[in-house]
Length: 181
Ligand SMILES: [Cu+2]
Image (tube, rainbow, N blue to C red; front, side, top):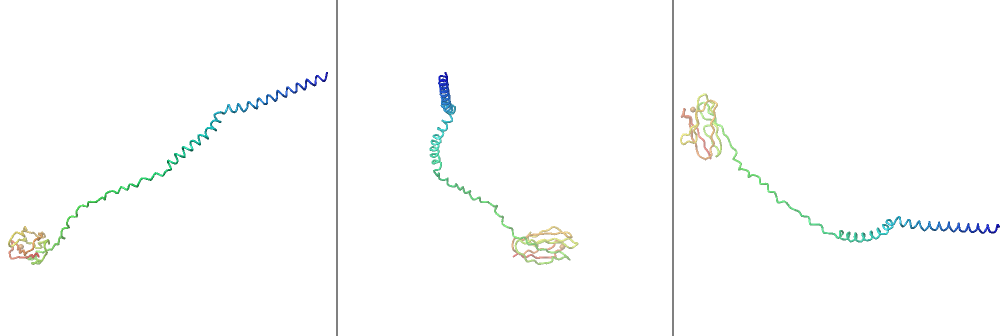
């Protein structure tokens, strides 16, 4: 019977179509489920992170506000060091310039025989004779040299004003004078 066969074919085809459609539907329904099941965390993350971001953003904003609130910078603590007073040692009083005057003893004579000097002046007698001579005060002890040989010298600094007459012991006629004023 061809008619029955046709109906059966149509019925089979219809069932097949139904089965295929059912499979497709099932698969199409399952796939979203599987996706949602496979990625719940991701979905949650995607959903949570925005809220977290919002929360964080709020808190951050508050934090930012707190941090942004301009805390006045601490005043610059200018620690001025105490003036270092370099205590330079007191300069000692400069001694007066030592003035030296030379007197030559030659030919049994003091040359020059009379000196005018200021207090503090040093007089140096040098014996240029072969004979020995001294520089000895006529009175007092201001001048009292040893016997000077040839080329030897005797020096004395006159610190007090006055007239100082001296002579040579071996040759008392040799006389000289120093006037300090
Ligand atoms: Cu003499």
